[in-house]
Image (tube, rainbow, N blue to C red; front, side, top):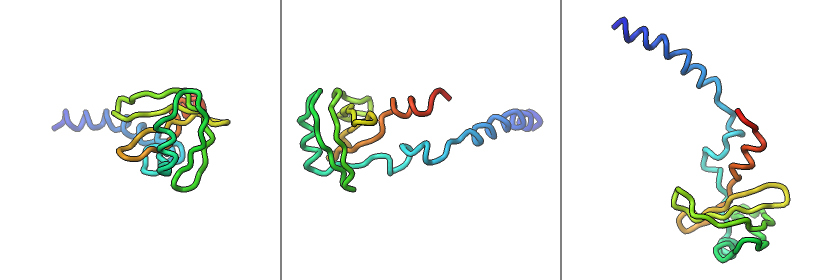
Length: 117
């Protein structure tokens, strides 16, 4: 019993440190259901046929517009077809989620804006 109490006492500062290092929801927005903005059917159809270098206007169901240039297409480890694209101000990723396509923030954008942590 004393060994268990000792181990708990050793582990407590570690877990407290992990809890204190959590970022705000704003910083970790991709961890919730609002991280993907789904495209209209018309935009999804355009994207499915897009090739690298092609410029498109994508519209989400919430009517947000993205003027993009397709950088490349790839098959993600998650099993999704995806497209790396660039807007005038930021890189984005557009992936297929079942029958729908959705826009999310590029990890490289997060990495560049946050720096090493």
